[in-house]
Length: 112
Length: 112
Image (tube, rainbow over all chains, first blue to last red; front, side):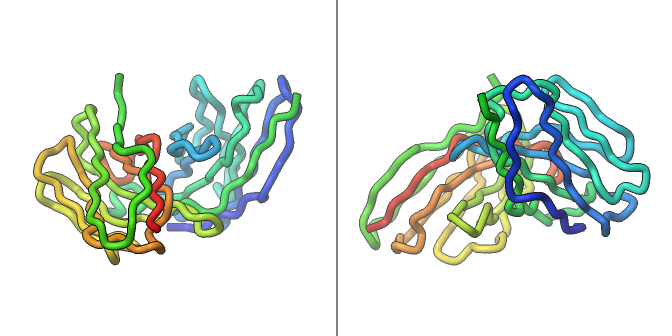
């Protein structure tokens, strides 16, 4: 699975959009981009995933560049409860036993 | 409610005293996995199971055992715990290894 690079930390004002970048320049054609987050020491929570088209769900939007070498997770109206570590993971379906590899992620602090 | 349940949530034990951390999911998932999380090391996979009676080692299996006798349960067994197994443990499940992973709330284990 391709490696990802994320900034270690970011701040966002409450009510504003939080844009979390992820670089995955070595991504291959069949690899998806997944985002998870972990609030404090709770279990990680799935947010969204995509292949090449932009995706949106009730939690967030995922924007993947046309060359697929980077992506951005957007939380449209960040709240204090969105303060968490956000993990960007690249993985191919049917890669069998290879577990999801959680890197260091981005620590997002939402500030009142 | 779809969930992954771990017990106990907190445990303090002594070196050498066998313990079991239970994990149960109610989503009929085939794939289940155990992770441990340590400061600076992120989430590391201990063991996983692709289906009933099928288990395999992850990245850090030493000192642990698992079993998968039923689809819903995947207990983690520490036959002779040692202080270096002090950690935060997460169980996770999904329909497929590459699918959306559902995590339990975590079990914080301290071995004295």
